[in-house]
Image (cartoon, rainbow, N blue to C red; front, side, top):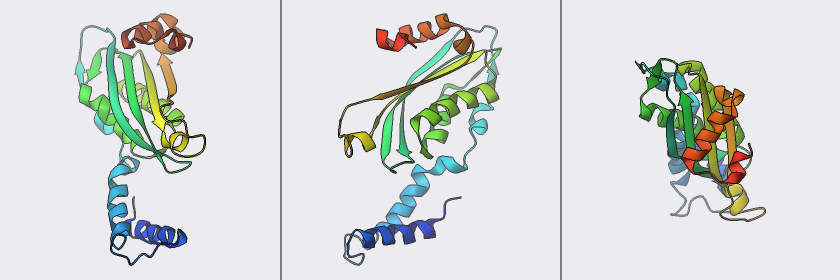
Length: 192
C-alpha cells in the first residue's frame, strides 16, 4: 500500500539534500504533487493480474492471437528513472480467449511498479500462462531506458529487447518465427 505521507517526507528531504529551498513558491507543493503522482504511476503494486485475465470467452479453434504495440511506461528500480516502449503478446489458446483490452491491462499491472524490463517480460508471460492456461505465450518488450539515455552512457534512441517464451513457444521454434514474421522483425530477432 502506498503511503503518501512518507513519500511527501522523502521528497522534502530529497529537495533539501539537493540544496533547494523547499519553501520557495515553485517547490512548496511539490512533495504533495509527487505523492499523488506516485499513487498513480505505481498503482500496479496493489493490483492482481488475475483480475483482468479471469474474464474469458470459449472458442472452438486454437489459432494464434497476437496483440502488438501495447505502449507502456514503467520506472527502473535501480535509478528510479522511466523506461518506456511497446509490448507484443502472442498466445495460442486452449479453448478460451481473453478480451483484448485485458492483455493491455495485464501489461499495466506489471509496468506500474518499480521494475526491471527483464523481470516485467517474464511476469507478463507467467500471468498469462497461470490465469489463461493457453498452449503457450510469447511476450516481447522493446524499451528505451532513461537511465541509459539521460545519464551514464547517454545514448538516446537505444532500445533494449527482452523475450519470454512459455509452453509451445518455448518448445517449438516455428511458433516463435511466426511471431517474428508477423511483427516484421529483422533477422537479428530471429536468432533467438
